[in-house]
Image (tube, rainbow, N blue to C red):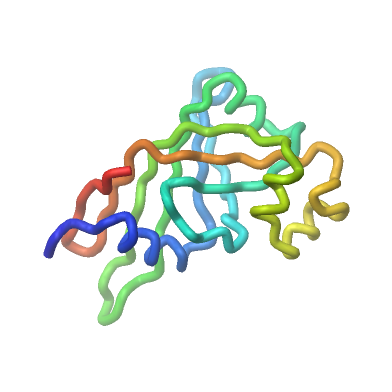
Length: 144
């Protein structure tokens, strides 16, 4: 089978809510945390995550914007293993309410009760530079 295209990969990513986001911590270690895409799944190489200003992830991205994302899909039919996706990306911290509104989902009010006006809300945009996948016995890299 031919390698996946970005469109093929986007369909697979649309079924995956949580991503493990990796940053470089201040002490040099790798820090990982689960982040939800909040239904923002029209994947074009950019991943979007809301967080709070005072979190470690914000400080770590300010110090080094290189991040990695790890995604795992659901298992396939007849015991087929799930798809695994690794994304190398450069993160950008966005503090613009107009951009918040473009990516806002009502479920976020659980963590940000004042919506896009919640003090300290930050949007992380992780723009992929390389995406590698393993889907059963197929593997490849998707051009971004």
